[in-house]
Length: 334
Ligand code: NAD
Image (tube, rainbow, N blue to C red; front, side, top):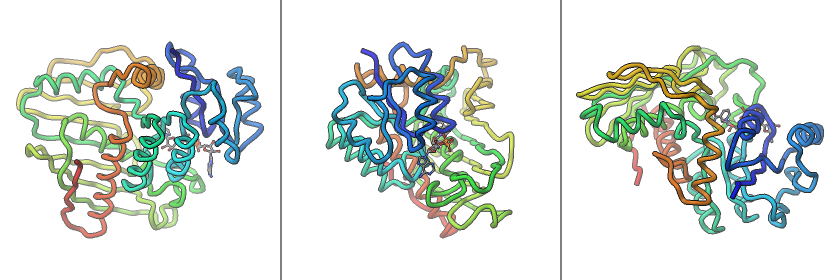
């Protein structure tokens, strides 16, 4: 079957996902949830969406009575993901939710529990878990081609513009660069090493307290310790451009991705040479992969479920605690 998807939040990333789904074999955009009627009309025309599959933020609970929608893809500001996921789960539809899944691990776990109780899947928009070059590095690591792993480096950042956007409003963003872009280094530290971090230390730098209000982090450097002794060193920032790199070093080899998390192409090299796999739109692969996961239970090389999202949120919680205390904070990922 084809996964029939409604997008909630018709913003810039929602538009990208809609565009990418055009080429999907297993997923199709069939519904819209938006607070802006003019956008709904525009999207309806562009994507040929029937009025019966269009909802707003007041009435979308009625989606439970719609047999023509299988899943809702939540692509709204971070702090809305939790309440919206609970409502979609209650309506009995599968949830695909953008990263960060929530604004802390407690909310993330509540989302996992609510979807489990409702008997629906909860998947997080980790598109890189389907990206061929990323998948190849994970395969090489799993098969021991890098040898015993020693070191991970992650650099995630860009210089953010408009000071009035929701990304700089702590109530809607739940944080700053860490929630938005730093999370890529956290997630990569976990999938490139194949281990869960056990401690973190972190330092925050804020050059512009006007733009980056309390609760909105601008630049954080953090260090991660892993059970086998691998050390991680990462940077998350809203104040520097051209930072998108993941590097893993082992006793037998290395992988160096740059750009590592942008929309593509993902580029890089390993001790074996340049990475040269094809570069389809990540979101096309993601949505086809998620349909296979939902319908056939086929798992991607690393998980994209709610539990995976909670692990990243636990690391973020620990990073913020480490910034506050200045000390080494243990991380407990079951
Ligand atoms: P955006 O501002 O372009 O779009 C957000 C949408 O949410 C807008 O259409 C807005 O109208 C709507 N919205 C609904 N309720 C709102 C409210 N109360 N306040 C403000 N806006 C509201 O943002 P975006 O870049 O599309 O990001 C949306 C989500 O997608 C974020 O969680 C972000 O982290 C995630 N994202 C993921 C990727 C990725 O590569 N996986 C890339 C970009 C964004």
